[in-house]
Image 1 (spheres, rainbow, N blue to C red):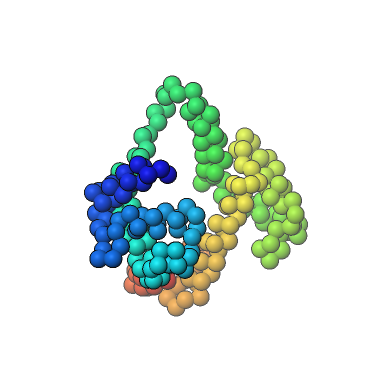
Image 2 (image 1 turned 90 degrees about the vertical axis):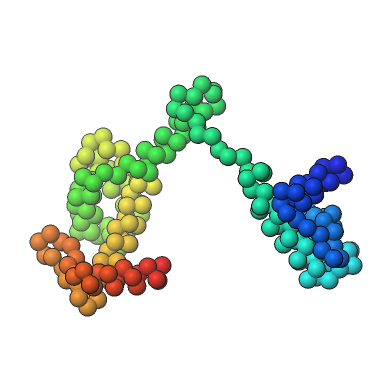
Length: 212
């Protein structure tokens, strides 16, 4: 950074960032302290020795400039402009293909996939491929093959789709078991869902929100 650019930066911080000098430290020294810290990783103690200042003065100067820079976010940060699907920019077509591919890969699970997926899991449990909630090597690939057999053309992949779904099922299972252990909760044996009164549910949601 040359002298002209440094002076311009100090001016912008003073005018737009509302940076003000103190009784003992001017704006140039504050900005110098800030730039040395973020660009050269200078330590507080080193700057204190070089500038003949206390460590507290160096720290206060740094944070004053930092707050001024944050106030410049609307000036320094360029607002993104959405790209239309029919954009003629030749660079966009590569990102468009990548985004579409990623979206299909992660959001490919449909509600009608759950029942056959659980059936596949139960088969693998009976075969000893899944024990105590832990999958042996090759289980994800086997689930991918089994799902393709049950739902031809579904395109469900072992990773990340099946791996993500298993993590979600484990999370829901543990949450359900926790609910069943609490007082006031029941289980509907026909429809397979928890039963709870409105009052107990409101208390549960309130406690759960506070924990999170």
